[in-house]
Length: 242
Ligand code: NAP
Image (cartoon, rainbow, N blue to C red):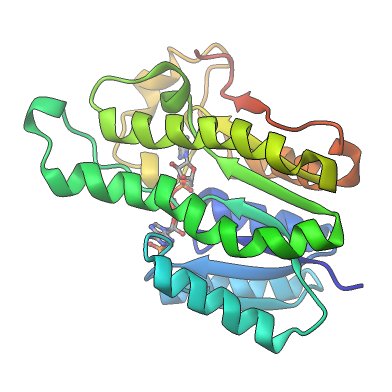
C-alpha cells in the first residue's frame, strides 16, 4: 500500500527537510505551505528526485474551512488510501514584550501553531483510527517548555500543542496511533535568520545552531515502526540548551 505523509509548512526550513527525509524513507509527500510558491516548487522537485511522488497542498493551516476542504478534496481523489503520517510543522514568530504586543500578533501565532494542529489533525484522525495505524508528530519548541521572554504568544502556542499532544496520545493509543512532539532549540532556518547566531551559539553547549536535517532525522524515527512504543512524549533537540 502506498504510504502518504503530510508535512505542514514544507516549503522551507525544517518542514522541507522533514519532507525530503520522509521521501527518502519511501513516503509519498503532501507538501503544505501558505504563500511561497517557488520554494514549495523546489521542495516538490527535490521530493521527486528522491523517487517519491509529491503533491502541493497550498492552504493556511489557521483557516479551519480551507484545511478541511483541502483534505477532503485529497481524500476524494485517493479512495481507499489515507494519510498515515502528519507532521504539524507550520509556525511563525511574532516576538514582542507582552506589554506592547498587538492583539493580532497574539492571535495569529496561536491560530497557526495551536489552531493549525487542530485544523489539520482532526480530519486525518478517523482514517488513522480505522486503519489502526498513524503517526502524529508536532513540531513545538524549547520556548513552549520553559517559556521565553518576548515570546508569550509563541510559548503559549507551543505549550498548548505540548499539552494537546499528551492528551490526544492517550485518546488514540489503543488504535496504533502515536502522538509525539519534537522540541527544537535554535535551528538554522529563515525563522532564526534575524538572530545573532555567533553570540547565541556561545550559550549552546554543543556550540552551534542545529540543522533542519538533524530535526528531520528525529521526526523520521518517530514516524517509523521502530517508534511504535513512544507516545505522548516531547523530545528535545537543542544541543544541550535548556
Ligand atoms: P521557517 O523557515 O520560517 O518556515 C516556516 C514554514 O511554515 C514555511 O514553509 C511557511 O510557508 C509555513 N507556514 C507559515 N505559516 C503558515 C500557515 N499559516 N499555513 C501554512 N504554512 C505556513 O520556519 P522553521 O524554522 O522551519 O520552523 C518550522 C517549525 O519549527 C515552526 O513550527 C517553528 O515554530 C518550529 N521551531 C523552529 C525553530 C528554529 O530555530 N528554526 C526552533 C524551535 C521550533 P511559506 O513558505 O508559504 O510562508
